[in-house]
View 1 (tube, rainbow, N blue to C red):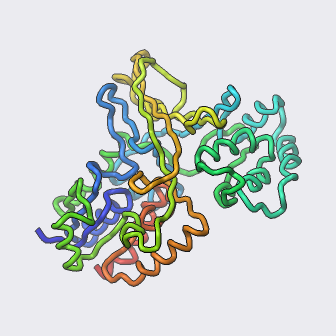
View 2: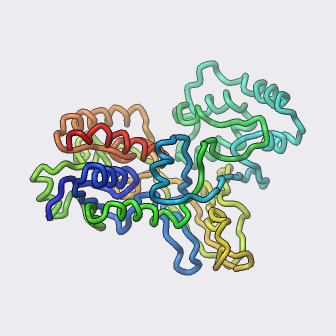
Amino acid sequence: MEYDVLIVGAGLFGLTMAERLANECDKKVLVIDKRNHIGGNCYSEFDSETGIECHKYGAHLFHTSLENVWEYVNQFTKFTNYIHKVYTTHDGIVYPLPINLGTINQFFQAAYTPDEAKVKIAGQAASAPENPQNLAEQGISLIGKPLFDAFIKNYTAKQWQTPAEELSPDIIKRLPVRYNYDNRYFNDTHEGLPVDGYEAWFQNMIDSCGDKIVVRLETDYFTDSEIQRLRDAGILTIYTGPIDRFYDYQFGELKWRSLDLGKEVLDVDDFQGCPVMNYADLEPKYTRIHEFKHFHPERTTGCYAPGSGKTVIVREYSKTWHLGDEPYYPVNTAEDRAVLSKYQDLAASEQNIIFGGRLGEYAYYDMDKTIAAALAKFDEIKNRV
């Protein structure tokens, strides 16, 4: 069978490009992925023992204020009305996140009004340098040293495996602080989870194209003989794998932060009472615990039902990435950006290769931004494919 386009990677960027090329341009598209499932890191699966939907690569919550993206995704799935809320444990006490008036009053054992809290935090933030040079100085300038030390400093050290004093201030420049009791985690217009799960959403994208999309899993772009034939023939390729791997690491490896995820089925009805609990102190070693049944309160049968006596949790441990690990978050130091620039120069000279997605662009994208980038890229190339 002959194809018009090869797409490497069945994640959000790749699937969006595949759907657009098939449905809008009537192209025959081959999508390959080295994993045994579609959806990339957004993939979820239903636990065989409990039937609870678990996000295989850590929690993925869909939220967006991009109307074109919201309109696009609703073609393939309906969304629940789930509103994401997070809590954090510090020194044996649970606080709401992001930092809001409830967090501030609980931490300082006070009853500040919004204006009083602003004055309090401004006074504590005044100790920060005028031009913060690292994450610690930037964080203190936003929320003051007591709150930074309690909720950000050690959590960040665990998360990035690097002291806050050695990290870029850019990482935390958008740290939200609310001077009201709103503890909704995201500020976006639209928020929710796919009603039937992530895999069903992604499969619906493929099915909408009839026979114009063929998916091959457990297929390696670099070693599969059939793919090598297509490469040699110069087929138009959308590559969403690591850009440094594409060029055989000739300028060195780009650095990532990776994760270890420890899943457990527990014989309790409810382990922590919320979807995500962060752990702000250096101990325990994990950064947070996900309890996946809380992501779908609308589900009320099986182990989702009250009194079921079963739940699934996942402890998330951050770790330094090594070749062979799953890359999750780009570290993006000045050194990384210099190396990336060299790879981008090579990519710009390619005639039939288009790089995209978080791995292909070495960028951290929320789900909606990944889809938006794919839609924009499709608009850019659709008249020449």
